[in-house]
Amino acid sequence: MPTTIQVKEDVYRVLKHMKGSMGFETYDDVIRMLLKAKKIAAEDYFGRYPRLKTFAREELDRFD
Image (tube, rainbow, N blue to C red; front, side, top):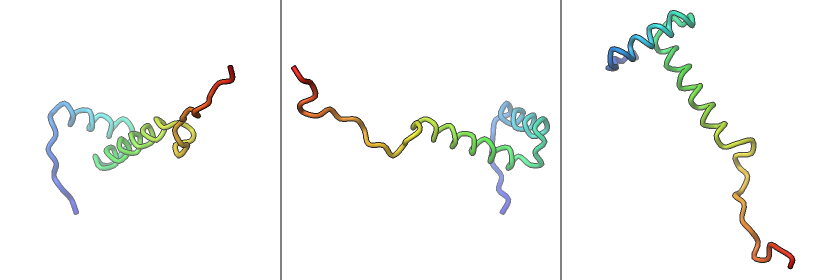
């Protein structure tokens, strides 16, 4: 279902430029690519093992 969204003129120009220079057919394709790139970057923020538990020192962490 097509929907109309409102963007400022400068954002429209950037989307239009990306659409033409990257060979996308629609603005939807451009926005999807940007969202996918953002998701990948967010996942990379958590490092190689995102499910690794946080480090906590043991009560006795040194030998004196």
